[in-house]
Image (cartoon, rainbow, N blue to C red; front, side):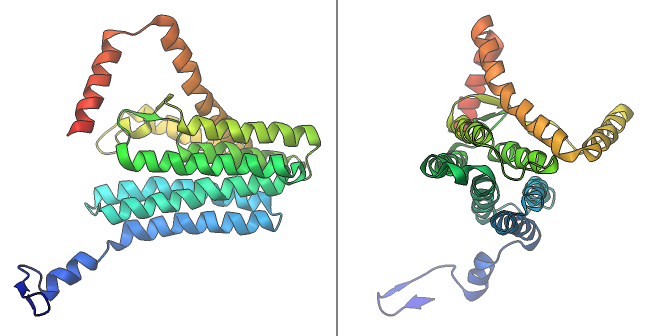
Length: 268
């Protein structure tokens, strides 16, 4: 194909190749769109005061967010477009949505301090996602992952709404604001968190794994808000606790080897 305006010929840029480059993979991006819609629905429900429905929508987005990447890898449909689209979806579902839910539920009464705390969380979520896009994560997460941060906030609102606390007192609102800021700061720290990516879902597993998975699902369905909030808080605390333990015991050779391997992976 030639360009008469500039007097040169473009090699290998026929119409079929152009159409192929402009195409996107449907299945993983459709799942990502579903996760984004869950975040959008959570925002609308939170503004309407339907906090339980909003929290459930956030958790549905978490499930879809965990699926889109695995589906893309299993079907070999990974792409740069999908990675960027997933990041934007995460910002809506795990950055904006949980922050606005908590704000509408209990931080609105704190006026300036309430919306400042909300903004700190959203800004930290954006920084966390941007850092992930640049460096990625390997055997562990650097900083609290945004889905688990959203799990704490959405789970807390769901739990309090479930027990009838629709209009929290001043002290509960202040505590929620400090929790929002703390969760936001943990997302941008260098605290290491365990990554579930080390688990492989392909291949055979011992029978006891299936039994424990079924038991875990039964526990979740017994009291979803309490269990999910407890799991989120426990995971959030695991990073600082592990950091304090490492500071107490001192560095070991295995830790140094892991850091060197991670640096080598970043350089590849």
